[in-house]
Image (cartoon, rainbow, N blue to C red; front, side, top):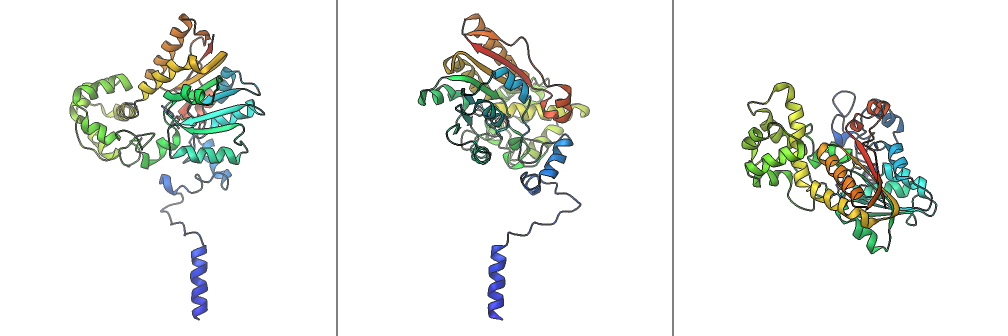
Length: 348
Ligand SMILES: C[S@@+](CC[C@H](N)C(=O)[O-])C[C@H]1O[C@@H](n2cnc3c(N)ncnc32)[C@H](O)[C@@H]1O
């Protein structure tokens, strides 16, 4: 009897913990979507989620891949950088074009997602001879190349945050999920969204709302929120919904803009982007290409101005004529592609 009990205990220890039951048919919470989190085992479920126009939990659908590859003019043997590795969707397609003998440096500032993406790409067969993963801010991309004695045939960046960051309540990026008001792509550095808001006066918040998200009611919102202590995404969302003077039918849009503005401030996104843009001529070989995907006017304006100035100053020999956008089929399949704008430039 004693033996049976012991065996029973050992068996129980060897078994994975039981998954908890959900109310209704499907798990609703991000962390409980066990099938979506394991695309290798549940390919059919993941394919259904993608076909319904949604992004499976814990993943990211790469945007305008063919257009980006075309803009970069990739060939086998090329050396380059994906400055925003994310889930590695673009990187895998880039690696297919530049291997054998090409090298891709994949950089990302997110210490939580980067190791997972590196593992995923290694499992796909991209070894150390062709792929290097580095945790770095893209402001330092010239240094990454310089340290390795390399000049790039191409540099690619897909700006903003990934679906893994955005959809994970624990990262605090979205007003749609309750979570700590964090919003840092690299949670080991700087102030969280909550700390930033508590330390920001109305004038600075108003400027951030205007400059980072073109928020038309920046003044009222800044007066209501500045310096307040808010720990969670829901607290911020509720405080915004209760501000008088905001139209009911525009509340979700306002929430989206305010969350975007705080995220950009917390991650110092424009400071990093401007440093990255300034460094590009030093990163690229003559004839090398840069392609950048942007998702809102503050990003696109900076990329456009920098490429135009580079063309005027003779640093670039050619730049894209206007922006390239996602086709209607992709917009339908992946609504997150709708605001994307792609621009490229060629080093003189
Ligand atoms: C839109 S996602 C990239 C998705 C990727 N192209 C893919 O196919 O999976 C943007 C990524 O850039 C990273 N990122 C944003 N700003 C960054 C910065 N200043 N330096 C380095 N990485 C950054 C984010 O952490 C995020 O993983």
